[in-house]
View 1 (cartoon, rainbow over the protein chains, first blue to last red):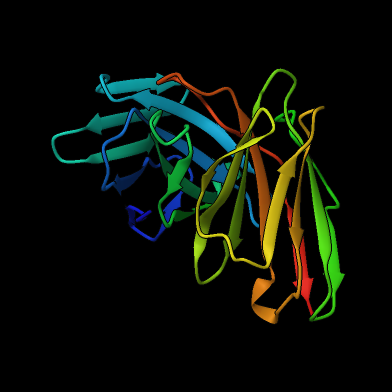
View 2: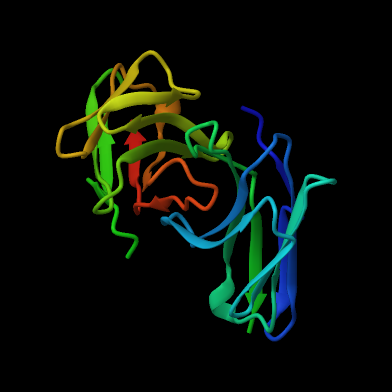
Length: 112
Length: 114
């Protein structure tokens, strides 16, 4: 399966600023999921947005989905140094057994 | 803690050898997925099992195989190892069949082939 693309590949911001990461995907999806990975560690599930939803919030996270453009964005508001990690979007499809297709990820660095 | 347990956390082995990675899914999850994460290939889906049966196959080499046991734990077997097999191997588990299914990942097994 083809992977989507994430943009930017790397992002460096100051603490307190907002961070926006974008994801484009290629297939028909039932949902889009965002994960976080601290350096070399496991993937932590952040948020899932269904294909019939346009926006979803969870704490300081805001995810949008535009199915006409096959794109999604993750916004982290008021970033903290602890948000430093890689962030991945993943396409979910029920027809594919809920297997996830991951993008290449965005490496976020938040400077204190 | 995602509830998915992977062992071992680290594994160092020589080329040509065979290793087995183990995964215990979250309680109640019937589906297990294996992923490989390497620097050049990113996160690649390898294989999925559902309630003991193979459900989907991705970019899994013929030297690799997996199975899911009646107690739902899964093992990924990697044989005739090559340097290029060095990677992080993740297991994830989920329920299946809904548009809101989330997958939860273990901490991974870091395999180093020397």
